[in-house]
Image (cartoon, rainbow, N blue to C red; front, side, top):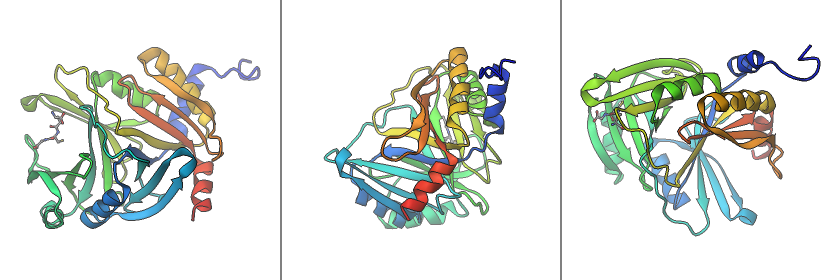
Length: 292
Ligand SMILES: N[C@@H](CCC(=O)N[C@@H](CS)C(=O)NCC(=O)O)C(=O)O
């Protein structure tokens, strides 16, 4: 009866987030010099430049880079705002991660091109995975993780959160993600939760990090958001809206088409203030075709 009157009961709204067709599309962040970052990511990481667009009316340009087509891969969307050559990354943003079969070899390549290695390759403290850290020209950290071959080398976005259980619940309920792995590392006083839609070795995940006793971080103005696809921005926004009432966070853009692009989106903040944008699957594919 309620549905016939156009009111969707809350359990149906929450089911939607789980059965929707979702995939990590891109991470959006600001850089001070587009060409400098494109050169660094292509030469040091082996990414491909997938597309570039200039929007002079709004005084910004974008470049999309990744390890495969945007139709099937997670990529980075760099934003250059005319005349702004540096940003504050803040303390909350952690890193992007790249999986590679040989971290030592990749580090040598990056070093030979003048890249800044901030943590030499070797087993992670308190674990076995071989990792290294690299700082890009704007100061964003990339973690290099040694793994077997994977279809999705751009494999993690790490964000620090002040309440891990609350954040896990939000990503499960509002975004329909699964808790894929939770690792407590008491020796180094942190807990991690890997959140995503499928196997963390095959697809991209959000790595939520809780440092014991730390509840607040600064956001800076450099990192912007993660974009995730959906079959219905309107239903998705209903689920997000319900969960923000329970756990915190807020819708920052009501569902609907972006003027000029016609792509339907909705965006919101999680309880820690991290932003996600949900983008209509079909509209996104149309946008890619238009820009080919
Ligand atoms: N305090 C750390 C907690 C997370 C953490 O330590 N992560 C591991 C990687 S999963 C790391 O960075 N280890 C440092 C190392 O092994 O040198 C942070 O906020 O970044």
